[in-house]
Image (cartoon, rainbow, N blue to C red; front, side, top):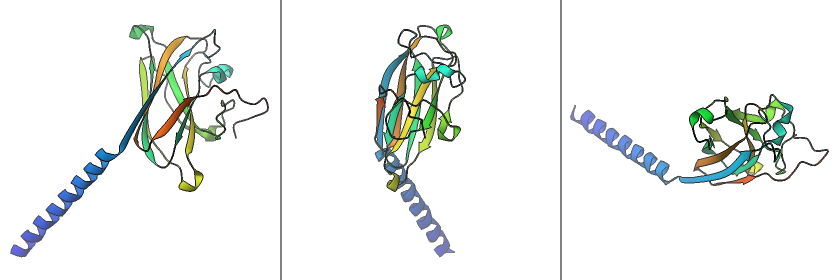
Length: 182
């Protein structure tokens, strides 16, 4: 009987040590946070609305490059003075073709995630992104947008990674005339 109690205590100690190690590893994971500011503007032809419209290609686009497996949080915040002045906003996350050019067509198979469109100051999405080592960095395109086209607002797009570092850049490169997202 004595031996079972000793074994139970040893097992409890071992499990406690494993949990402490796991928590320490989690805390040691690198946290990377990048914010980009943008706007939906009629004058700048960047207020295209959601994928339900043909104008969505006018929306700002951002490339995120990440290597390996990591958990990311993407937050889109519109910079409106009062909540009642906010537009219905959301965003799409697409697997990129790696060319760092604006996406101009959206085959459904490339949509990794999308948010619902809500009439609030911000919307967030947390998800796991992963690429195989042989594939190189994972390349994704984030397309923030208002639900309706031709609505103007300034916004901040923030991506936070809990694990692997990443790069986030604005896409200012127009697509080649004959290029399609493959």
